[in-house]
Amino acid sequence: MRTEHMEQVERWANYVKTHNDWKEKLKPFLDGQIIMARRFYAKLMETEEGRKKFELIRKNRIN
Image 1: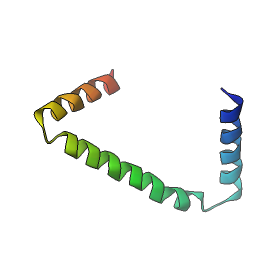
Image 2: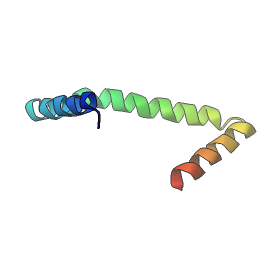
Image 3: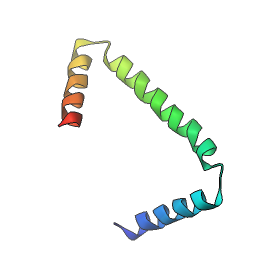
């Protein structure tokens, strides 16, 4: 791993250890990411070409 990445991992680990409310602070961000992904896939499924791309994504994810 790059040094910069390890520093970020260590900072996050220290933050989690010292802040009991880290889950509550992170939850809105993660929920937003899930909502945006669902909107993206719903929009993608509106066309035949989009459905084909979705199937390609699913195949590549599973394999």
